[in-house]
Length: 471
Image 1 (cartoon, rainbow, N blue to C red):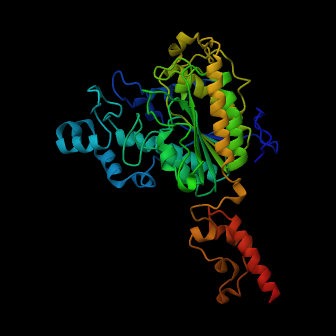
Image 2: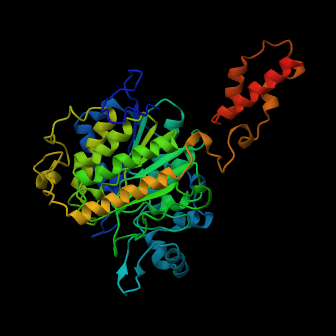
Image 3: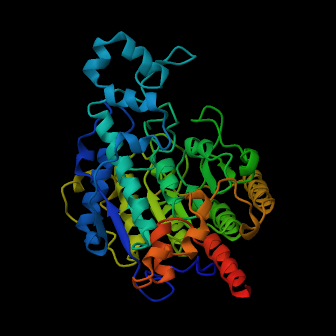
């Protein structure tokens, strides 16, 4: 990983080859409907895809054609009872079965009455619920597998990024946490994964899933104030046990603009890359941190939001880009299209004028411009500047409190022991095979290890060879 290239917007890797980008899109996403008046509109992903296609960016990527996730694959994180419930829930079954309604309510699905007496339906029982979950989770798992295979540098799934879902509970418009599933997939190949969340809301579900792990660092930049969902993600929340200082939060005040955001984002993320030294990075690109969002109050421009993608792209670690929140759908589609251009290295080549395409009428309010005009930021008060400076100092102190990556003692087993392999089995052949041509030992090692982390195995194998030579 090139630690010094993080500011370079080059479309190529350090060795000069073009970045290899793969992309997932399921056209069925445009048919998913959370209900009239609901803030979540999955059609925004179809709009982003149509815009990506109209700019010709599909020609610069490999299209991932994959199956949906299986219910069994969801069990890598979610409870069996919860997965079974998702498979049973339909609007008709919900209305006719009182027991099913009560079970759904216990798991955060369907109309809920809040403590103040108001009724909400954040996670409605929608047509095709299980199919929708399996589709976006399957996309994120396929994207993670593409990175694990080493054939791609960047993988994109704009329908993913559902960071609020819990192990056995829907939350914040999210039913299945595809991010946790994708990170677990990445851990089968990579030893350390950095998760960065630039959604307007705290990435609570992902943080909670890995709060006690030092193989995953979660880093969330989000609006944080009373009465703003989910109300978690304080600067003092830093993880627990082996994961202490590996779950970091950067709480932001309403009105944060590009300049203020990157005065926090770049030094903190840069420090995380230096200290944690991840083997892969996941970036949740929730677009509700954009100016003009219907629910959040941050003031990022499309270019300012995309600068986070560009910055992380420059480190040249395998990069998984996921969607997330975003409730002004034309702004969301503009943002994810431009960030796709950043991923393939064509951000300086695409026109600002939005091409004619099936959804172009949605962009009238932004003057048919890809990077729409945001509200001119007001001058920040000295108090606001001071608050941001305190947050930056605290976050950097938390990062300084963890050991640099090479000396980390990982909480979970890895290498040959984790795969149930005996290194002796990798060094010796069966005597009955003496008449056969001896396989190359390195090729045999790779075949036996598959996706295991080989570094520890190489060390132990070398020691055994030296020992045998002494004998």
